[in-house]
Structure formats: C-alpha cells, structure tokens
Image 1 (cartoon, helix red, strand yellow):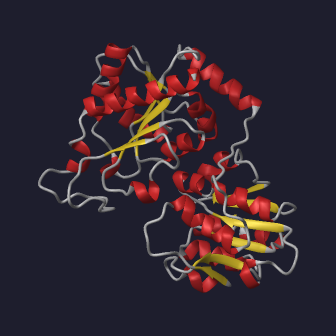
Image 2 (cartoon, helix red, strand yellow; image 1 turned 30 degrees about the vertical axis):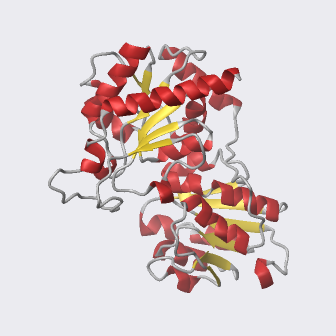
Image 3 (spheres, one colour; image 1 turned 120 degrees about the horizontal axis):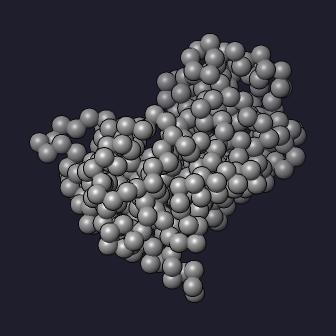
Length: 352
C-alpha cells in the first residue's frame, strides 16, 4: 500500500470508536474523509450501546454495531464482525480491547496509531505516526484518513442527518417548555464525567440568574438521566426559574436540540463537542484539561479558565491548596459577559 493507497477495492470498512461522546464527535470528519476516499464502501461503526443513537444520525455511517458493557458483550459481536468480511478495519480508540477486536474480525488490513496504548499497535498491520506537537483530537484522527490516501479537508466536515422526526421531537420538547423558537435562549450543561471538570453549581446558578434578570435571556438545562443531581444542584440555588430538560434529551436528539440553541454554556463535556459540530457558539469552562487538544473545534467559541501554573494537569483529583482554582476562580460575571458578547456577535451576523 505505497503512500496509503489500497491496491484492492475497499467494499466494507469497520471503524472502531466505542466512546466517549466527545471522541465520537471528533471522529466524524474522519468518516467524511473516508467516504470521499472510498465512495462505494459500506461503513460500519462499532460503538458502545449508550452512544449508538448518536452514531445512527452521523451522515456517512451505513451500519451501527452496538456493543454491550463487559468482555462478554464485546466478544458476542465477534461472529457477526467476522462474517461481515471487512476489507479495512480502523481502530481510533487505541486500547487493548479495541485493538484485539480489530484483530478478531479476521480482516487483513488493520490500521491504528503507532503510539496507541496497552499494546494495541501489535494488533495493527499499518501504524500511523502522530507528531509530538500538541494537536486537536479531530486533526489527529484525520491523520488516519490521510494515511489511507484521503485528501485533508480544508474545513473538517461534521454532518448529522437532519431527520424530520427529530425536528418534530425537539419542537415538541421546546414548545412544552415554553421556549419561543424566534427568541434567543442559552442551553446550559452543568455536568461532566470528571468532577475536576465541573464549574461550581453556585456559579452556574448565579450566571443563569444574571442572564435572566439583567438581559431577559432564558436558560435551558440539559443532560442525561444520570446528571439529574448536578442540574438540581444548580436549579435549587437559582432565584429565577430555569427550564430543566435534564433527562428528557436523548443523545440522538442532542444535535437537533443544540442546533436550535443560540449558545451553549458548558463544562468540558460531550455536548460541548456536539454544539461545536452543529456550529452553535460555545462558552466553555476548562480546568485540568487542554483546550488545544480537546476544546470546542472551530471558530466562534470561547474557553474560560483561571491561569494557574499547573494547568492543564489532566488529573481527576486536585492537590492545590485552593482546590480546583483553575475553575472556581472563574467568576459568574466573567462568564455572563462572554455569553452576551457571543450572543451579540450571533445577532450581528444574522442581520448582516
């Protein structure tokens, strides 16, 4: 395969990217580039079952192979994958389990990163080198498509299928919540997988109150059922009444919901990446993580953090005397001003 060019037709491709929500969004431009490189190929995406509804609305994906938690769930998919007779398997996860799964498919062409973890490169027949310089995950994943002969896109493409039933479901959800589609509103995601990524709930509450009282901008909380407690910790501290849709927004509806929002105010989280993908402006709070590598992709977004010498530390605990100072020292007024500046820019571009 000189220069990454395949010498035989590629009819069936398996992409292994089981999690997490943000990482799945980061892989979307790679799928788009592969579809251009192999326009006749059928693309199957292996993903954890909880994220399968999102992958089902990613343009360019023909089939979704949903795996259940645990070794039994993964191994249970092996016969189906072997029978699919893939011509090309791409592992973007880069862990032992995903690398082993690539090998267990029986496919002769298995591609992954040379610096992948847990010995997974031993499972690949082609290893893609990654530069040492900091690189956003979107651009890093695109290295694989380039290694397979795809042209690097001038603007990486994030494309969700805009289904009528999803538009109707979002319309109904917002209508029942009393949100007027013609007026600006701010979506707010107050949760994150790591506790060290979470801006304090009292800060979120204060920012939401100031947006509502001073500017008349309604705030809509969103998230999955497991994030109810984080949302309640915010709404319970608010003076104004927020719309709380936490637990009512299935993951497959997030692109449609966030496309309708004027802006997303959020921690470093999966919904942040979906908002950026649908070109909704983001104001994001970053603590221990690195926005250069995993920030909202593209232009028109604002990342706020407090400068301390140890960030980004990428830690799930904090040993500073002032715990999580990189997040907690970002003040609600600073966030409100960033939100309003972004909304003004959106308004100006809409009337230009």
